Length: 155
Image (cartoon, rainbow, N blue to C red; front, side):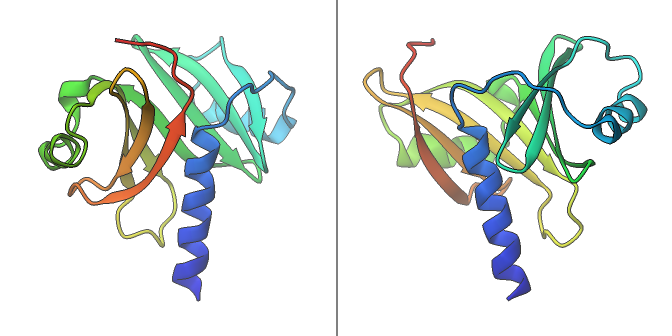
């Protein structure tokens, strides 16, 4: 039962990654204080909420990072990475299962949950020009989930 609950929590998080039309909001002082402790040099952060999480989006070393907080604690981070930095097994899975698609962006997601077997996951946005998908995989190339994204013609 614990494992099912954890998988549901992870699945809900991945759904939040696909949320469209988020509006910037104010977050609790506890969340802001924890963010400042973790990222003392970040001054320009935009806050959004989705479901029961607060998401701080900022740029660090030229990469977009999203810090996701639940109950004022860091739950996960999503860091933009170069497509070439995807693990080889993830790239192999994408090219085999999604023939005709090209990778338009990639992110590394790190969960701060001790109960998870693999705390790092990879999100790849792929397109075949008429359809754009977000594919989430474990580092070993095993697919976790796929969601449709609004096509916005990135290359």
